Picture 1 (cartoon, rainbow, N blue to C red):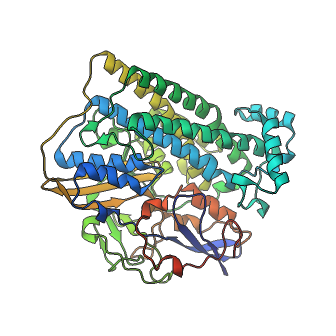
Picture 2: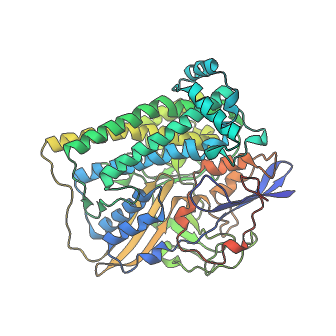
Picture 3: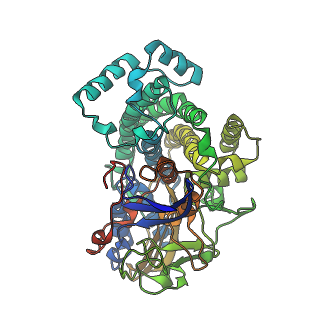
Length: 545
């Protein structure tokens, strides 16, 4: 028995540590720690809800739109506001652009290098590479030109953006030709992210940290030039996503079938729903809300069932309480996996842990019968060797990785539909984008989704100012520490059972962590000075000891 530690976990947002007990080459226990304290709930007190929506998006530079959106919805529910249809469509497109950016970033540039070895691509035969791309059904590229660029990197001894990874573990399975294809798409993905951010910039005034999302609707009123620009950018991303993303995912799955044998997690999924339908009902959103129990039962969400436990976290007390009763009372002690070991609270739904993220959204949408999702999920299930309707084959590291690609395709299609809907509405004379209000108090919760999962912003407003505010971000659910009953959170449970061939470079554990797309930047912004001093870096993706 020994310990394997990844600290810091790189290619994520924020600071995250995974400590694992390894016995006979398998993880037998795990503890995941978020290394910084978030105090944003305290920052927005005594501010106007309109200001809060602008402030809270500073939690993150990758998903600021989602935080602004959840905050805005909380204010609108507190004030009893229903936004105009034009605002609904524009806000959907703004959120959709962020999802596209984030999912493309995650698959190619954050998780991709766990599976793709660009250095191995130097051995590829160019003719065979084009043949393989055709066989896989994915896009070609200037493979010879790219190989020359990679050779120049290697000859200089500087691998630039590809340095600092565990390519020498002997656990990379792609052929040189497949590595060259995926590396080409890695670089193209950067251009697609720029296009997605350009959409956000048009709709949001700037990006990151948009300005047009306000309680009551949107401050963006499109011009004909804006609509033309949006169409060109959306079509560009749509065409690329459909030509590369899902084929690339299935290609990775073909070379890494073992990734379907570990990383299950708690097997219980939550989605708050995202992308408003005309009804504004959570369960009718384009990606609907729901709680999918381990036995396959699907329930509606109930805010009263959300609690947060702090007995293994650096906060005062050891109670399991609803968010507003728990409050925010940081109290750092020391890093001790037998006691308290994270700044992350332990959120629970109906007393049990819950996984959030792309797989959760997709499975809830699948169970609710969203046609696009049902069609493509069944395609992937079949491609992986399962039977239609049985999603158990997706409940692992590989399935969690594949889920976001289906969602990306769905959102790319929705972006085209929403733009057409907006144009038709404008042609019909609809020119309303914002509704005013004179409310000064109330309580409201914004149940919404960031690309990384279920996002909860809740606020109490008195005399026009925020009296109290609570946030539960998606990664808080996934990296939850032990609960009062000794149950591990989703990521900790997913790590247990993962094979580890080299405790200093546990690549399968890293693949499992990245499959959750963790973003602990949401847990950062006010740093307890003692925090970093107590952490010991045992090993890192750079091999530092």
